[in-house]
Amino acid sequence: VRALSTLLSDTMQTIRSLVLLRSCHHLVRNGSSTIDYSRFIAPISARREPSAIRAIQPLTLLEGMISLGGGYPNGATFPFDGITVSVKGAKGSIELKGAELDRALQYTNTEGYKGLLPFLEALEQRAHSPPALQVGRSIIVTNGSQEGLSKAFDMLVEKDDPVIVENPTYSGALAALRPISQSLFGVQTDKHGMVPESLESVLQSRPPGTFKVVYLIPTGQNPSGATLTAERR
Image (cartoon, rainbow, N blue to C red; front, top):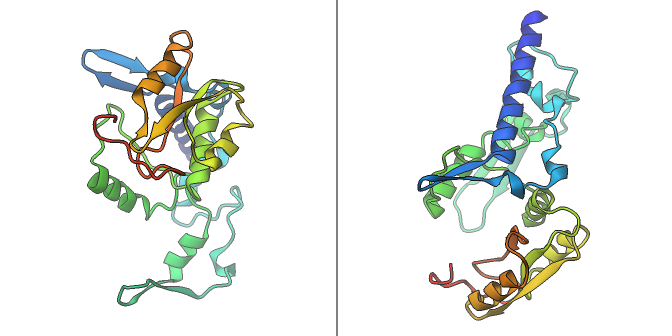
């Protein structure tokens, strides 16, 4: 029991440290200066604590462990023997069964299905070649763009924070933003996306430091379909 308690305590401490590092004190080297992004985190988001249920998940992976703590259903009770998926234009099919299917149907990590994350990280690196960060980066799987937007706005925007958006912009983003803030500033767009001069005008209309969030769609803008040129990016 003492060993399990120690492991749980260490796990919770590790998670707290990661949350503090990644969410509240995300530092990136920029030449000789260090940028502290903690001021961008909304107070309600900064006050969030790690989930105790998620913290005990490593314990459920111990050999012979039968956990009653997380509410995980017994895989033997799942009603599916197998799932087969066929993809248009591709030969063969994808089949899930046995232990692999049980893992896919079971509650999983907050970040997403563990077996999928390495593939997504490799895809991100191959398709986008993102710059290296001092503290690394991670991926979280969402149910779609709307959930991702909601999480990002919830993390960054508090009540009536001024937010810069394209005019026009994605109606789904407005649906997520408006309950949080009614202080939205539209920036003109053209066939090449957001107009830099209009953005500069909006920024200069308020004291320095007023704005901390700009929401834009750089590629295939919705609803205009515009893509920002390299010069504007």
